[in-house]
Structure formats: structure tokens, C-alpha cells
Amino acid sequence: MSRSPFESPIVTLMLAGDAFSELTPTDDIEAAFEAFKSKAWAVIESSNDPAPYTTAWNLINLYAQSSLVEFSQGNVSALDKLKEQLKTSIELMP
Image (cartoon, rainbow, N blue to C red; front, side, top):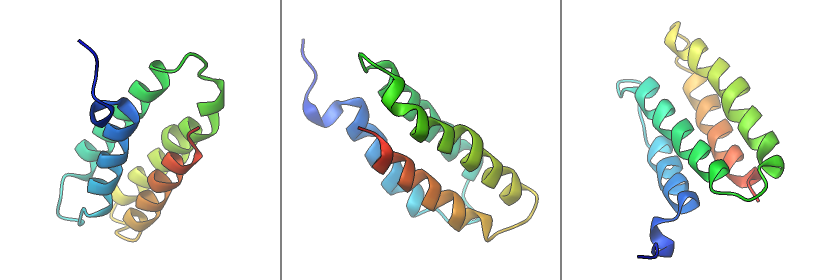
């Protein structure tokens, strides 16, 4: 059984990115981030060549993770930075 293009890992990731952009500080940001990160990894794993995804993955795994820590330590403005980083990571994917 083949996958519909609407079920592809990149589409799933894009939908997760859209949903993340709508989150507020009262939402479970950490769980949403982990779900996004998992979906990004699924995109990379579905690729024949993961090398072009390095920049996007580093943005998620290093920089966005750091913003998540800032947010969890009470810096509410870090959520906007985190949202932008996740959006950019999708744009960086081939």
C-alpha cells in the first residue's frame, strides 16, 4: 500500500510546524517540540541522503533546543525565537 502525498514525512512536519506556530506559553511547549523534532528526524530518515539536512537538523537540535531551555527557565520571549527557528528549519530542508 503506497502512501498518499498528504501523509509524507515532510507534509507531516510542515503541519506540525504550523501547529507549533500557534502555541501559547500556557501550552505544553516541550511536548510539542519533542513531537516536531521526532517528525523532523522521520523526514531525514526517509531520505536517501541525509547530508543536505544537516543545517536544518542542527538548527533544531542545537539552537531551538537552547531556546526551549530558555523558555523553560521563564524567558517567555524565547518562545517566539523557538517558533522562528522551527519555521526556518523547515525552509532549510531540501
